[in-house]
Length: 132
Ligand code: TYD
View 1 (tube, rainbow, N blue to C red):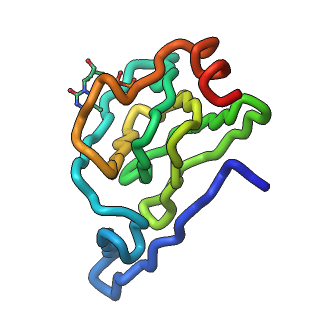
View 2 (spheres, rainbow, N blue to C red; view 1 turned 90 degrees about the vertical axis):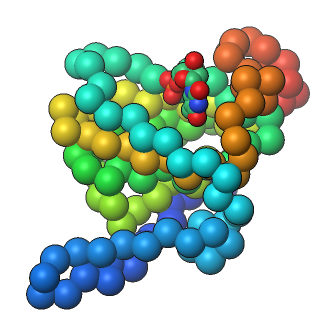
C-alpha cells in the first residue's frame, strides 16, 4: 500500500478564478487545531526530518511547488505538491522530508493538534526503533 495518500480538493472556481475550501472532518479527515505556512524557503533547504507520534497533517502547496519524502521505516516514497487542489495526507508515525521548494512555494499545513515538541521524533534511528 502506497505511503502517498492524496486528497483531491474540488476547484469551486468560476469565470472569475479559482477557489478551494478545506473543512475539518469533511475533506480534511480530522479536527483542524492548527494551520502553519512555510514560505520564502532558501535554495537547497531540506525541512521536516522528523516524525510525529500522534499528529496527523495535510500539506497543500497553496503556491509554487515542493517535494515530499515519506518513510515508514520500511519504504520511502516521494510526492510532488504543485497545486492547491491536491493535499498530501501525512499520518502519524511517518518520517517526512521536504525539499526542492520553488522560490514562490507557499506550503500550508493543516494539523490535528496544537504545537507540541514532545510529539516529535527528530532522530531517524529513534524513529526506526519506535516503529519496530
Ligand atoms: P519544525 O517543525 O522543526 O520545522 P520543519 O518543518 O523544518 O520540521 O519547526 C521549526 C521551529 O518552529 C521549531 O523551533 C518549532 C517551531 N514551531 C512552532 O512553534 N509552531 C509550529 O506550529 C511549528 C510547525 C513549528
